[in-house]
Each structure stands twice: as C-alpha cells, then as structure tokens.
Length: 113
Image (cartoon, rainbow, N blue to C red; front, side, top):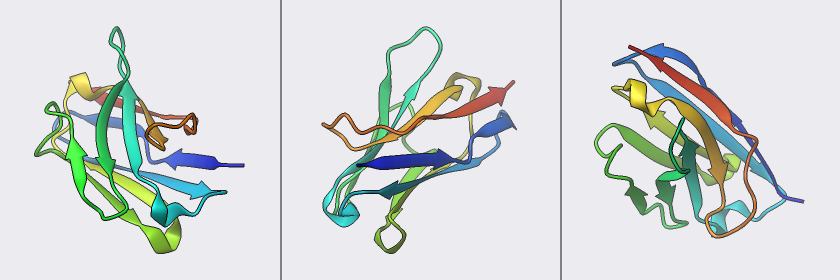
C-alpha cells in the first residue's frame, strides 16, 4: 500500500527557515502529482503547494515567494523549503497525493514570534 512519511518539522523563530521532506513508497512516484497541505489552528486545511510530474508548481497566495516545492523522482521524495516563516504558518503539514486519500501522518511546524 501507499506510504508517505514526512520529516523536518520543528520549532523555529519568525523569519527562520525549515525544509520538510516526504518519502513515498508503494507507488510509481514519478507519474503522480504531489502536494503539501497544512492544518492551522482554527482554520480549514489548506493546500499550500503542489507539483506535477512535469515539475510545474502551484502555490497558495499565502506562501508565494516564501515556500518552494520540489521533487526528486530518483528518491521518491518531495520537499517543501519554507523561508521567512511567520507565526501564522504554524500548523501540521501533510504530504499527500492530490485527489486521493493517501496522506502522510503529518509533521508539526511551530513558528515563534
């Protein structure tokens, strides 16, 4: 079955950076779009970034210019580089296959002001 395992979350000061990683197994990775979504306190889950098999990317307005999604098909991995983090970026970040029920377990990101 499909497994998505995230890592790289943590506590960071506002203005800092974190890099999230997600390694997939059980799928032919390079034919799937991949996404990062987040669940922030008091808000609905939000798709923050997605990347197509062609490596075309899309971002939520709230993270444009600060977050970068990338993929390494040789490693079955997708990454989210997060720069200039803000307290409102605090939440649980999930790796997933858009349009499917395949989600990782999530990794906590906390940005202190």
